[in-house]
Amino acid sequence: QVQLVESGGGSVQAGGSLRLSCAASGYVPGTNCMAWFRRGPEKEREGVAGIYTPDGTTYYAASAKGRFAISQDNAKNTLYLQMNSLKPEDTAVYYCASREASNGVYCNFFLGSGDFSYWGQGTQVTVSS
Picture 1 (cartoon, rainbow, N blue to C red):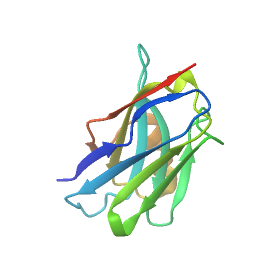
Picture 2 (cartoon, helix red, strand yellow):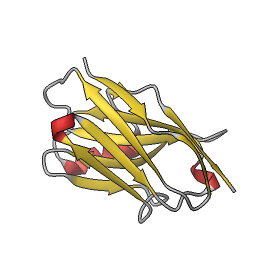
Picture 3 (cartoon, rainbow, N blue to C red):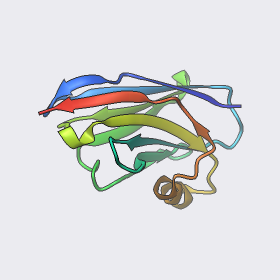
């Protein structure tokens, strides 16, 4: 059973930066696709960024491209999301998630579908104007 614990959320003014962390424990073989999702007020859950861990290929939603960066530290079993140039519309609860994927193409597909096996509890990010 994989356990995911997010941290690093908080309040920031527009234009600021935050780095979210997701500590993973309880390794399950094959969980090689990790991602960040978010759900804003009165919005549907959105896949923000994903990474296919065997080769480090990354995938981003259009809303995140150029501003957010997903990365992994295998030694620490930790996933990160660096968020720059934050906007009020980035306000949301951010979740990390993991699952198995055959390859990076499927990992990207699951980022869009939201079909992940393991989820963290989320961390709140609030961006004020």
